[in-house]
Image (spheres, protein in one colour):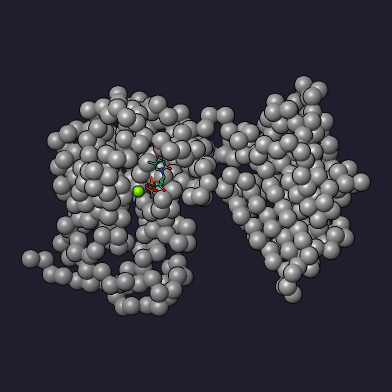
Length: 455
Ligand code: TYD
Ligand code: MG
């Protein structure tokens, strides 16, 4: 029997050390070292060698280009984030917080694409639980779906070799374990070893494989960066469990653009792709209310109109409260400081709450202008017309800076019936010619926006 050896492994980045350390010298995380048993004969090295031994040095000009056809799913949103479908032999890591809908979406891939033979491996749920979920999503079940509730990689590989599926789904990588290692499932060494085994296996069979991974409390894929380097594509599920909308973003993609994003709605019967998302993030209202402004954002490569809501009120207690949902709170504090210093609004002693509708997170700096307008609208209690929208980044001196792809944003706003859009003076719109239905209000400084809105 191989001699057992233990080492201490950082659960956050995978760094190894012979001794326990309080702080990881590689990633700087505290208290993340855990003792793991590694048997010396094992693992990645032998897997690596067997996978690589057949490879010889060759001239690049002799290499045939990738001509394999992508597997195209019935779900166009998923095809798009993958860059047009799944490449045979590619490893796709699908991350997200618990309960957000990862298992549901993956099961849907299996259920709604009867043209492909799918093996769905679950280490988290029983056969009956999977069946119940499948019944919710779709009543009729094709006989092209195979399920296996197993966590041992060797058994999974044997099953896949017997069944010969066209797609392999693993739910989740944290539950798998390889008998080559003695450490517990979910530890960094196990996750790394299992991913490596699955990687070598799916490449050798040209089998596209989806691996579900949980996200830890810091928001990165639990156990680790090492995993992201190994796979071809990393997709991340975002959204708030208490809201309907879910976004799948592509964070890394060796076979496509990482600017892509897919939008879904969580219904009683599973996740439904949202094909025309431009207007869904704007709430229907009959009268104009103060504290609401609409931003023309770009999420991925698609323009999206998103509602920002603010509430400003006199601080009830000594220290004013600042709270945001879906927007970076430091950025809001910076914007408030600009508002106070450059425009003379005394917001220092006021509570400010900011909310992005639909439970989604926005990062596009172009939303600054709408956020500030919503805040001032609430403070002055003057509504902004629901036919107005904004797109501009605000700098520290109160200047409105240009944003990328302005033409796409303005044309989308016009298409959706907006009558006026506020943008930076430095954005060039000369490429757009038919702008008869929308007024483009160009500004240099934020005061000009407020003067026009609230005079
Ligand atoms: P799930 O896919 O189990 O999440 P994850 O695998 O990411 O942990 O999603 C679970 C949530 O989705 C659960 O709270 C119930 C809800 N849900 C629906 O609203 N409709 C449905 O049809 C299904 C299957 C789940
Ligand atoms: Mg799950």
